[in-house]
Amino acid sequence: MAQDGAYRPLWRDVFSLFGKTNDLEPLRCPDCEESDPIIDEATKRSTVPAGARLLEVLISRDRWKVDPGQAHPFRKLPLGVSGIPTLVRWDFKKNEPCRQRVSDSEFSQVELVHSFFEANSLF
Image (cartoon, rainbow, N blue to C red):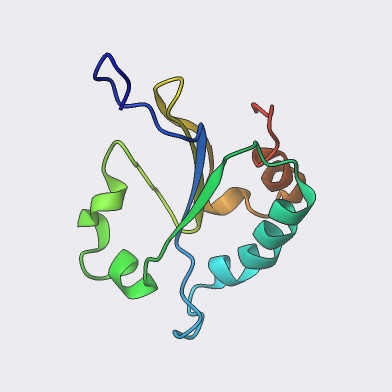
């Protein structure tokens, strides 16, 4: 916490990946299964901003589709996740909660996913 009482995080960019299942559960999300190698390659190949963090938010397909389904809290703002997988880039120093997003249907655009992690990318 800063001297003026305002909260200032130690990092600027936080990337959240919603929808990736964990290794103990069989992959039952075809979109997640297809996006995993693309995301892995993108994080290795890209110039990720210094101090950035990638948070993997695990969501089972059944909880997303069935119970609670449309009432899932991640579907509501400020997250507003419309499908899984979804990548969200948060910028806390600029106080922009959701700066960029790659949604489930966009993961086939490999270069879009790669540019998502670049230090100065804005698409």
